[in-house]
Length: 180
Image 1 (cartoon, rainbow, N blue to C red):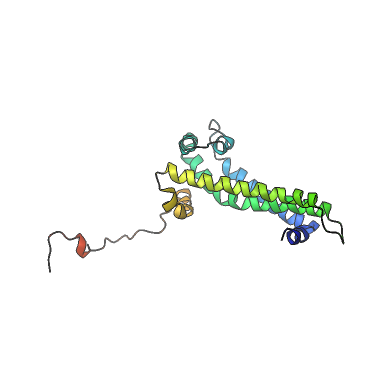
Image 2 (cartoon, one colour):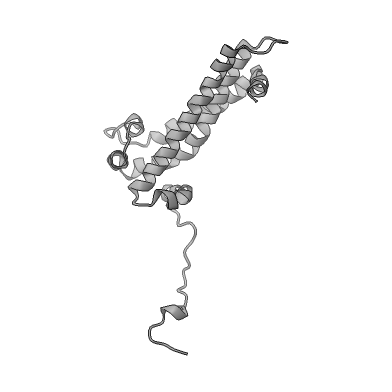
């Protein structure tokens, strides 16, 4: 599997396309996080927040606009590790590929390092989602599945899914003392 991935990324075209995609995602992350107040803690402070209470303190210091920027940055941050791993892997494969010869163990080791880094980045992203669920007083296991919807909801200010505007009649269980 590693050999096939190495061979498929060992072209200049792959290296350029993945680099362009990674650069676009990186720029979008920077643009989103520019909404942070100048006196607020940096993004690095959030990445070094190893507890939900510390994460909540950083998000509170950022204020509403910073929190919204962070929630908006979650979507590109889930694509960015794949893009930079493929970009770095493609450049390594392109620069080390020798036609007609299989790559050596050390070349493959070097080739896999960006993908290991991306896997660790995904672990960090999921831990941030988990801690974000904890800061909102949610059960991390039960409510983590709805977190992307909540991020969209909080980030955009929309009420999704829409709540019914007409009140529904009470069910039989809700009626007090009525017997048929």
